Image (cartoon, rainbow, N blue to C red; front, side):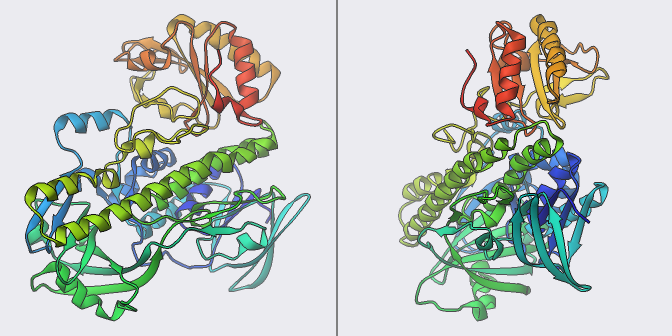
Length: 549
């Protein structure tokens, strides 16, 4: 067995990499030391950009069935206890207008789905991908590289094995040892403290029913912590409590702490408790010096849980890297394209880390404020100041490769048609009248979108380009209204897609396989503009840093 890519680790990032590679037709093997997903829920929030990726994989509905739509719990409550007094609340979808605005920004919607269940969904979905193999119970002990690729040495129930691959993806988690073997050094900022997580089951419906929340911040004399909604229909919760340096190990107090958080007698089943250090980590390089090994997910970065960006950032790492590996292995991209992975993803991870740390400090300050029992106005102001912690469509959808800052507004997402940004979502109609998102058009290659007035010129340019190179580019013409012709002509019912993507006469937008804009082309010389943009996009990725003028 000699796959083109070997993935070490079947957490969310590793499994997402296998899905993305498999969908691109890349033979992939995933090695995982566990034989089943963990029972602890770990992360719970699946943000909107990750849900778009799950939708691309055909797994959004399965993940939603294993989780809870966020709109069913789109608030954060601040309480003295579950059964106590509500100090205030932060509505994440304040009114119908905001709900409609968010719905118009993406074909998917965020959800609550605990990491262990999402891993089950991702793992089960691999069975639908020919050429992708998952080997569990496999402990990888060593990795080495040579001119022709990399070799993994692992053991499983049948003995010791060697696995050769063109490339290796290390999704081994924070405590993996293979990064060091590959010459990738972990970095760490100062810890922000320790957290105690208590996973438990209890029927809290009599207090939380009708006011379901993504989480509840609990502040009383016995504890300050967060009650995280894992699965309300299964009575499953996670209590997360910051620990002081003098606290020591409090896992043995789990039942008492849960009781203090609830504040009323109720039957509780403790499923597990763990203590861990909260902080941010990174790595000094995302691709090793041989060029054969990449790090992603928790092996590349970890953040405080405040904001829920850890798992989501890892899945999005995989989505960024997979199409580039597939393009290089298929022969239509230069290997230099792989050098863009770290420069694109590291600033996103760095921003998410900084924002998560900011959120953690802001929540600690609010906890002290609430415990001091100030007046209602001060509490209301303090609660509203926490909004970027929980209401972050701008951070989830608005990150832009090659830009500084990488995110503009954390809360509000403003669609942009600029190189490096995610192409704005608009609903189009195909020849059968079926709704198609602008995010659905890339498939395994690039998409070129142009208005009807310039469609023929750009379609001809794509045809000529195909005679010159093997890069897969599909031209799509946007037609007014619901009218649609052949597969490459799509109706634009509202006209919004045409107005946004083709703002200037003759303009076209080139979209990468991962849904990010590669180039905005003015249309004065379609063929030469397209050739130049495509060549840059599949060599050093420099088209994501400029608009063609």
